[in-house]
Image (cartoon, rainbow, N blue to C red; front, side, top):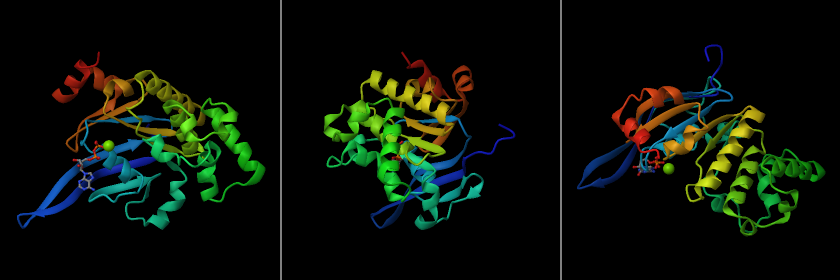
Length: 259
Ligand code: ADP
Ligand code: MG
């Protein structure tokens, strides 16, 4: 990657939460420490860690939803660490989150059409026939029938709703997708969704950051793996490096536990 520019960089990012005072003492919780990573165009980075290891905090910082307590965030080498919500808005078109919970992402009262085109409407990009054409293209990209545009979320299966959430995340033609796949889905449906994201990423040339508690789930689609434990990086490298020469006992145990 020597000649390539990372699309996203976190440099020594830390996050400390102030907790309610306990017995009059200040209490702090360190959710992330010294997290550094680069994501390059067309690359898939998987952040792996058990519940509470800091994965969602890292994603929220990358999305600009949360400010780091230490360190810098760069988007295409531009320092965005201290941007206000308003200043971050143009970037938000280019960084999209695939909502972890499609029930939360898709308003039950809105048709699939409305959900998919909402980002385009919100940014005032398209209307009328152009909007309808974009919706048909987006739903086809995720391999759902165009007729589903008229349906409500409850008329779709969990996996189909996840496909709609992906179509919606693609609406603004992002350069970077951030994703927390739903572990509530059947393993086979999860695998189909990851295959779809892998295919789209290759076709569209986007960078993809994937967060999961399951090393086995991400091993097939990721290029790079980063393992978090209690907010600290215990492993970082290509999939081959990590599997062949794990740097920590913790990662060795994760690999050994894969069936
Ligand atoms: P993960 O996504 O890996 O499960 P999170 O990033 O959500 O982990 O959380 C990491 C740790 O930070 C957890 O222990 C969580 O309780 C804590 N945490 C997250 N957000 C807050 C907050 N707003 N205030 C206090 N603690 C938080
Ligand atoms: Mg989480």
